[in-house]
Image (cartoon, rainbow, N blue to C red; front, side, top):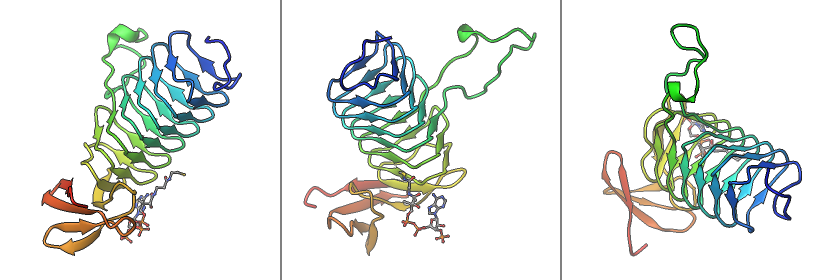
Length: 203
Ligand SMILES: CC(C)(COP(=O)(O)OP(=O)(O)OC[C@H]1O[C@@H](n2cnc3c(N)ncnc32)[C@H](O)[C@@H]1OP(=O)(O)O)[C@@H](O)C(=O)NCCC(=O)NCCS
């Protein structure tokens, strides 16, 4: 286990081979596994789990009891709510057909990928190998089985898109002719296809 440092709580279990920026805080009873890496200015909440080799970017918030199983990839500025689970085994079994226990070599891990600025609401489950698009928002309690588009607002089980959100995370307002506006920042976006929204440069 890595030596206690000011930014890592003494009850956290951090592997020696994990890399954690000194500007990142790891709180009580969190576990960070071998070869995991966590960038600058992140918070890893109480009881959270960061799996072997998982990569987390800068400025991420990983809330209490979130379980990020390898080989997940988390970009910069991502919010992962409390008790979120990223799975890594599409067809899980504890044992082989002959009844022997499965070992690591008996199954292929698949990971969840989360792009910049996205948020995953509390208690959601993301079923690997889904990709969560940049700046998208997954409502609390969702089960994500399909890829989520950039800026999409998705909810439910299975999670489906019910709208769009901007960088501020607020639902965008339909301004007609494929244009969408953020009620907080007034930033403008254009829907170019059923599942594609782009940010307008002059917003
Ligand atoms: C998804 C979310 C952003 C929507 O907020 P909103 O825009 O204020 O949405 P509304 O309350 O107006 O609901 C819009 C519709 O979506 C539904 N809905 C909202 N949140 C939902 C959720 N999490 N799961 C399923 N349906 C949801 C509502 O029932 C409503 O449906 P209707 O139009 O058929 O009546 C919000 O509900 C949410 O889940 N935020 C994440 C909270 C969270 O986990 N935070 C983490 C830190 S604790």
